[in-house]
Length: 320
Image 1 (tube, rainbow, N blue to C red):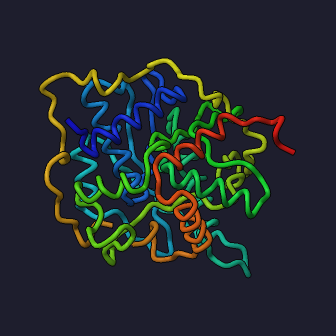
Image 2: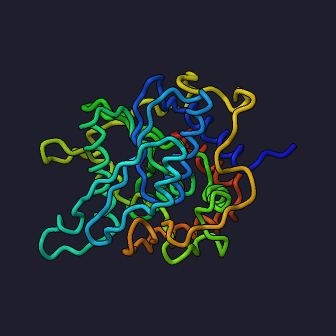
């Protein structure tokens, strides 16, 4: 019997959580809720695991609303978070207002400011982890952007511990592909069925990290910014971690019901989500890299996962 797309995503999230030992029992996890399908599916999946007794952690979602497109999450999406049992908070941040005179608004600046506020909120409210909705395609795109634009072999890590703060960044969707999220998003009514990226006029896709992850992974303390060069990740050796706060998908207690998924596709709400988390989008560099990655891999899941695995199997003796 073939698995449903929901079961496939569930298993890939479990694998990521275990492989990089992302979550320990009793942790407090802050989910970055952009309003897009990726973060929404991340919230759905973690909430389901918690409900089924497979994730021993406290969950809360935070939406960072900006000043140049100040639309909050739609009432329907808010109701979904409530249905999933995840409290949802919203804070207002003057992203454009923070620009110095003469500087222009861009996605990199917005992403950095939103990430900074997520981390600040997590520290102030004593969360132990910030969960972001980046997926496998985001990881590969960032890898090639850094190679071609920075001459650097690096990408966003699945787990990042900060040395100076009791906080970590986790990416539970690390092994999940964009197409899988799109397919499941259509089932949940989060994505239009018109095409992979042709969402409704008011639809919203998660903003992904720009090519400069050093600043994007910064932490504010007393108005200062600490770069990722000073915050070294730990635990990225790829060794399988302890089961920790969750168990495998095969150990789901019988009789538990899934919420709002697994059945026929739901009709997308035209007011559910704008492209990115706002009406502004200059992320064409990533769009071009996405096309190149697809051309390189032919859209093959095997090829994409082989590229990711190669980062954990580097033969330095055969490199310059």
